Length: 240
Ligand code: SF4
Image (cartoon, rainbow, N blue to C red; front, top):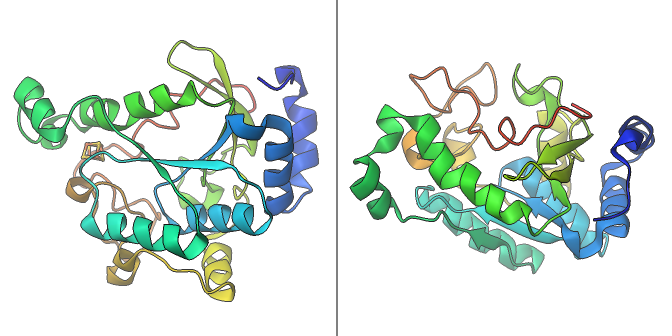
């Protein structure tokens, strides 16, 4: 891991806060090199981050968690974006296929216990991937939801063994409008589901279109659940 003392989080966060997102990514690559990785589910913010890294000549690896339950449109968009940017986004898969999970835990676990389903299909996959990284870069923004309104720019997260992994949200202080303006300005594509009213896109069984309110309001309809656990279950509390 880059030799950074977690005690420096306030100082580093303050310095990074004054920089443009592309310079935050430059710091990330210069500090963590091949041990930095962009995690994306191909939401607009992720597209911006991938484009910033690409156009700045920062060869930061990128990965996505393919739960096996993504919308076909999302997978089509992944291929389209990879071709557009000339990049490859690694697919990280769950330990079990959807069928194997159904055999062990029953069919359509997401309808009965979405927390467990997300743990098996997302959180565990991310945990495995975090052992390849010392810095995890995400597209979280403070204006996405009430739950995300205090998201830090730089923090420490935890791998499954509770070891440290740094986490950077380079667009944390961008608004939804800024993100969409960036896509427009640079002629970047977006997932066609956004044109059908989906404002935040996750797995097919757990995502509905929404007309207003929190950007993530269409996720897990009918449940109190607001987060899949990728960010809450890896939170270490330092910098957050
Ligand atoms: S979002 Fe839904 S289908 Fe996807 S892993 Fe979570 S509970 Fe399962």
